Structure formats: C-alpha cells, structure tokens
Image 1 (cartoon, rainbow, N blue to C red):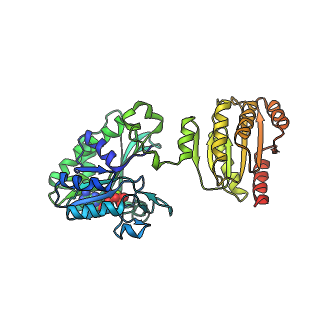
Image 2 (cartoon, helix red, strand yellow):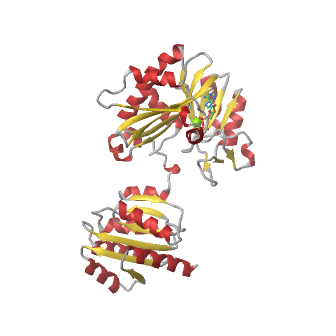
Image 3 (cartoon, protein in one colour):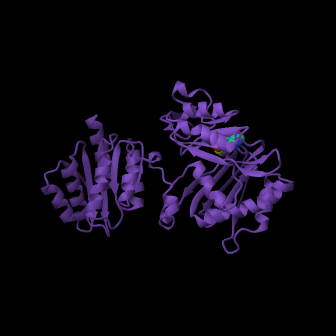
Length: 399
Ligand code: ADP
Ligand code: MG
C-alpha cells in the first residue's frame, strides 16, 4: 500500500526525522489560510499523487499553467493562484503513464534553501534477508539512470537485524554523501530514525529523493515516498486509515475485499488461475502465442465458490478483456468448486467473450461434467499449451 508524500512525512516526523512544516489542502479556498499559517517568505506548492517525477511533470489542461507539479511560490497570492490552477487538473509524469493522475490534494510546504540534493532509500533486500540502505550523491535525479550510467555513485549497505542500526551506519552515509560538520552528525540520527520508522511500521520501501543539506548546513527530508507491506497492514490501522482509494485501480480494490491476489495488467486475456507459479506461467504462455494478459490472478488453494465468483466478475467487468482463460490444477483446490464458481458468475453477469477452461487434478471429472451440463459456451482444453493456443485463437477470431 502506498501513501502520499505529506502522510509519509507525518509518519517520519513521529520518529524525529527532520521534515519541513507543511499543510495539506483539498480545496483552493484553503490555500490562503495554509500559506498564512506557514508564514513564508517562500512556499512550495506540491501536487499529492501516488507517483514521482511531479516536479518535471506537466498538466494536461492549459488552465493549469506551464509550471509542473511542484511549484515555488513567493507570495500568498501566488500560493492561491497555483492552488487554483493545480487542484482538479491532471498531472502527467514519467511515472503516471500518459493518462496522468488527477490532483485532488496539495501540500503547501515551507520553502527550503537547498545547498545540495542527495538520494537515500531503504528497502528489504531479499538476497541478504536484511534491511538495506541505498545512498547516492546524485539526488533529485532519475536514480535508475544513475544506477545504469554511473553505478559507482551509488553506495549500498545492509543492517544486521541482531544489532540494529549502529553509529558506523551513520558514518557510512555521511562519508558516501561527503557530509561534514553538523550535517555529518545529523546523518547518524537520521539513519537511526528512518530505520526505526521502517521496522516499526512494516514498510516495504522508503525513498527520500531528495534528502538535502540546507544553506544553513542541516540535513532535511524534502521528499518522501513510502510503501507498506500489505501482509502486515492488519497490525497498523493508523496506516490503513491513510489509504487513498482514488489512487488505486478499482478492480484491485474489489479483489482485495475478497483477499484475492489480483494485479491489473494491460492486455486482452483475462486469467483465472490457482497458484502463483501456474499464474505466472499462464501469463508467459499467452505472451508466447502473441497476445497479452489482462491481469494476474491467483485464486489461491482454498478459494470458496463465492471467491471464485467474485474473481470471475472482476475479470468480466474489465472492458479490455476480450477472452478469458481459466487454468486450474486442482490440488487442494477442487475442480468442481471452480466450475461452480465460474457458472455462478456467468449466470449473474453473462458472458460476452470466449472462455477457455482447462481443469486438471482433484475432482476433475465432476468439474468437467458441471461445465458440460451447464450449457455454457465453453472451449475445453487439455493442458496449458493447448489452453493458451485456444484462447489466443478465439480472441483473434472475434476481432
Ligand atoms: P518529485 O520527486 O515528485 O518531482 P519532489 O518533492 O522531489 O517531487 O520535488 C521536486 C523538486 O522540487 C525537488 O528536487 C526540490 O528541488 C524541489 N523542492 C521540493 N520541495 C521543496 C521545498 N520544500 N523547498 C524547496 N524546494 C523544494
Ligand atoms: Mg522527489
């Protein structure tokens, strides 16, 4: 789960991290009060969307002006103007894709005088099973580009969970970033605060780009992007409360209500599969035969008929879906449960596109009988390869 920058900064502040003062607003009328509260003389008006690259982004609407999604304002009037221009309009950045995202919230923040911008992120390194830090002197820029062109400018290290963060980690960061004086001392504190926040809140990723040194020589968190491990959200109702559903794919929200592992993709073939491995293989083989999957879906080993019905409805509701592939290898999951779920869903919502069903494993004969006797126009398949070829062919013929 992702949250907005201003929410991430509030979380980090609880752990003592140095963030700027700021006020989130939802309506242009709130801009003046927020600006006066902060006092100026410089404000930054920041679009709050779940995507980066806002500074260099562009609004679709001419009325939003030419200045991007993060704007420096030198007066209260300018804050008000920017708020009016930005709120409700669509910001397109490198990370939003061409459709862009509507800006429904702004963060009005006090302006910092920036001496230098750095990059710092924390993530779970699966290779070492540890929490790892990534730091670079090349902040504010596309870190992927830095990693590709000048990998020597990126320093990484991981923290031993038995000791936790140690003073030497702070020194490593200070050295990697070439910090001196107060900022070097502050690095030790910041590393400990960020690590504490990361562990306590079950974060999956924390990215600060840029981390800055101010003209006054202090370290400051100027941007913050946080995502949380969704498997641990049950422990953090205060984080769940920060969820902004307007930022999420409605199909994924619906799927999460049924505890389905569903991820929306761009293609035309809807997939219902049990087991993550078989689901991945199904996506690959569809691609192999020249079409693309519309989703990843693992209905799991113990899905009920109700869950299968919900999953099927989510797939058929997607207008991009031109054909559906059900690929079930019944182990713990039983083929007859899948068959009943599919039929219940089709009876409820109808079926406008070709459907290929491949069933194998536990109760396969019952499953096949249920589908045969349902009178549904289902194309049966014998194995994964056969199933993929049949759905690709059916989708192409229907075009
Ligand atoms: P994004 O990464 O989405 O473009 P950032 O929050 O990193 O958004 O902002 C882009 C740039 O705007 C930063 O690299 C920094 O130069 C500038 N900036 C952001 N917040 C402030 C601030 N409070 N004061 C001064 N400059 C800022
Ligand atoms: Mg940034």
